[in-house]
Image 1: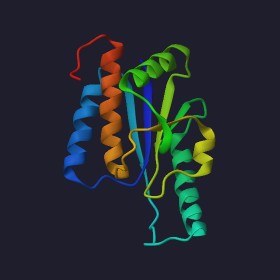
Image 2 (image 1 turned 135 degrees about the vertical axis):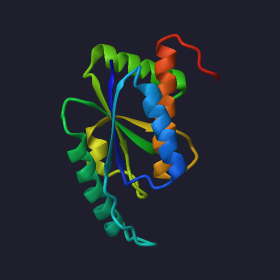
Image 3 (image 1 turned 30 degrees about the vertical axis):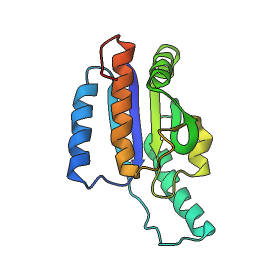
Length: 161
């Protein structure tokens, strides 16, 4: 069974997102071992300088890496500049990760400014969910839904398209 750890910047505040996450956490229980770890976000000024932005991303990145824990994992950075994967691509990657290991996959979700270069450095893959920009809190729900869909595909179970 694949072990999935989602490490994300910031706490979810919106009730509808919390409810959605609870639903997919429940559904995924039959398919994988799942952990979601939230790390504190930094206050971001309205118009941060490049230096301020880099410092904020580094601080948040340090927290993400500390929370990721175990060094023996496959890191996946959720990044709008990453590679676009179909649901079938994700399912195939999940199948290979489970077969060939390590059996722990860590998905990194950055804050408002994205992920630090240090987080990118430990990631074997960079995945863009869409060309659209989503709030980082919503990305968690989209990610869980896609992981669930990938699990269903890998088990040969039906899941509407």
